[in-house]
Amino acid sequence: MRDPRLVGHAKQMRRAMTAPEKRLWLQLRAKRLAGAKFRRQQVIGRYIADFACRAPMIVVEVDGETHAERAEQDTERTAFLEGQGYKVLRFTNADVMANLEGVLETITAALPLPFRGKGRGEGEE
Image 1 (tube, rainbow, N blue to C red):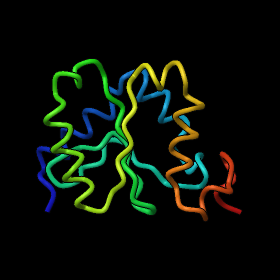
Image 2 (image 1 turned 180 degrees about the vertical axis):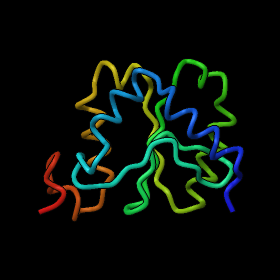
Image 3 (image 1 turned 135 degrees about the vertical axis):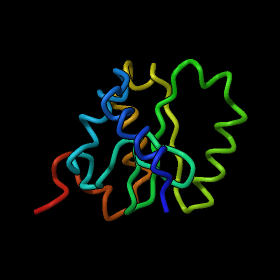
């Protein structure tokens, strides 16, 4: 059962996304990236993932400057998510803002083959 406090916090986080999160979300939402369905601020266990796709199981994290001071917590979080079967991809705010195409290419490359051949917006027929 999901912690109602985490669910409430995730809802608040959806309303207060950072500029890099908003920018990436515009590319991930509505199966725009290779037909993969991403959700934002998704509760997984005791964590809230920035973006998560359940099929295939991928988590995308967008890290701000404060994450440099939280390396140990991020390592623990990544280990938990990987233990749940997710592949975790991390990008900095600067990556998303300055190299969005490269970020999207990296995410696409992490998708299994059935998704990779599909361009943006070509996920469903």
